[in-house]
Amino acid sequence: MKTRIAFISDHASPLATLGEVDSGGQNVYVAEVAYSLANMGYMVDIFTRRESGDIAEIVDFQENVRVIHIGAGPDHPIPKEELFVYMETFSAHVIRFIEAEQVKYELVHAHFWLSGMVAMDIKMKLGIPFVITFHALGAVRRFHQGTADKFPQQREKIEQEIIRQAEKVIAECPNDMKDLLAYYQTPQDKIEIIPCGYNPKDFYPIEKTHALQVLGLCPEYRYILQLGRIVPRKGIDNVIEGFALLHEEHNDLRLLVVGGNLADLRRDSEMKRLHQLCMDYAIQDKVIFVGHQGRETLKYFYSASDIFITTPWYEPFGITPLEAMACGTPVIGAEVGGIPFTVRHYDTGLLVPPHHPNRVANSIKLLLADKQKLKSMSRKAIKHVQSNFTWQKVSEQIHRLYVQVLQSNRNKKNLQELAQYFRQASDTFMKSANILPKHIINVGDQMCQVLQSGGKIMICGNGGSAAESQHFVAELVGRFEIAERPGYPVISLNSDTAVLTAWANDFGYDYVFQRQVQSIGQPGDMLICLSTSGNSPNILHALQQANEQGITTVNILGKKGGKALQYADMNIVVPSLDTARIQEVHLHIIHQLCGLVENQMVRDMPQKQVSKLSKLIA
Image 1 (cartoon, one colour):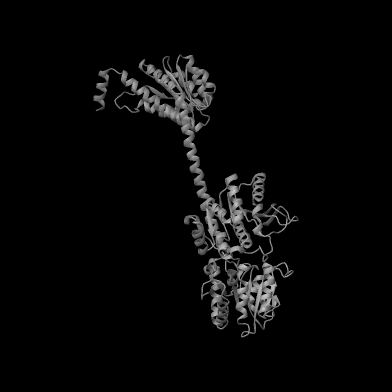
Image 2 (cartoon, one colour):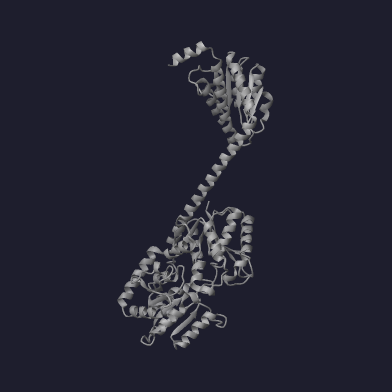
């Protein structure tokens, strides 16, 4: 059986076009991790919000990976900042889908805080544990953006609750972990650092001349590259301003800006602002905006460029530096979020503070002036990311986390079940304590009368009751608590294997106890039958035979007593329908009867006999 995992990715579908306002690293993460997990034997369903009325509810994305579109709000893209009001509907529809399809998910992996809300609802309604990758934290985002942040004020409180309920929180880098500890007081043992990655099938070094040719770029120029979503926090203005400071002394240098929508600048305020910035610096002929590109084209842009630059002022991780290094392109990156975790300063690139165009300009100059350093960084960058940051390696870490969470959840369930068993046993014992003691005393008295009058006691049962019958006999023939007493004539009908097998083989097991009662039972003896159901044919036949021979009959039963009730002189019926609970109380009753019989027989024994027995034992 394959392990089924549900991904919740409210706004970031793996089917979305990358480079648009709300399509970027999270979309890539969800798609690549789901694909890698499927290759490892998982079955992954990705629940995301429906953004088009034309798309099917269920789309087979890859083998063992489905994308399930959930109706919540309008059937068109809306900013993720406006999705909060639709999350209750989203949750209800996801839960309805799971129940209708009867899909047995073992774990939910939520992506982003809005998805974490859905994961909490699923856990509450269906009991499925969850882990979360936030991809961005509200407190940190608000710290950097202030009033420009458009998410609801309650985001951070909700994130706190998500962290409390999650089994594990995946931090994408050490800085992410520090933020979880500092802003949310997340227990450190709940955090697991697992980075993002890149796919070596999509990103690898390409000969620069060929890359330029594929893109139709002029080979007379040198290119630096900015690639990603066109939003203010990515710090693209910082790159443009840094480029503006050195373009005159590097006349052959061009800046490529990949991402965003060039079709309608009036609606894309950030793209419009960046174009205006280029005009203000009079570099509009040297900054080439190419808009969003298909993922299959990106490796050519990385490979065509001498340097990749990314200087966001807030970045939870940053996948583009990995992709650039995988193509052999050194990175100038802002020292924020995951970038200092992936870019090794002076080894695979350079780190600069955000909002510092002068440092960007100086770093570009430094690298362009040293071709050998660029080549060395290129080689080291490729080796670095191949060793540490492929999606395969990332997914193996996530798999190990899943195994840990699932095992912990199973242990937790086992603990809960065991505690429940104890409570059930306690309830059964308490019910028994209210109704059984007088019956046990009566049976104990009758056992003593049989033994004192020279009779014997025969005991039988099936399965677990057979073992308990032998236990019962061992306590009475040997001793229970009083050593200074003789053994009592008590026989387990289950212990004579020769009779059991021969009679069962020749005449059927239904009559093995009846045959023994008939052959060794005498009037004045006692037959005690142990049975949880009271309906076993061999027990019923033994009771009927004992009745015919004037043998006192006793049943120790459970459930409703069964047919055996009508054939016994005395019945002890445990008030439970659970076989295990009945057997547990049966053993307790056996011990009580042993104690009653032992104490009464010794108490009634003549003093001379007691003294003689004590000397023999000594």
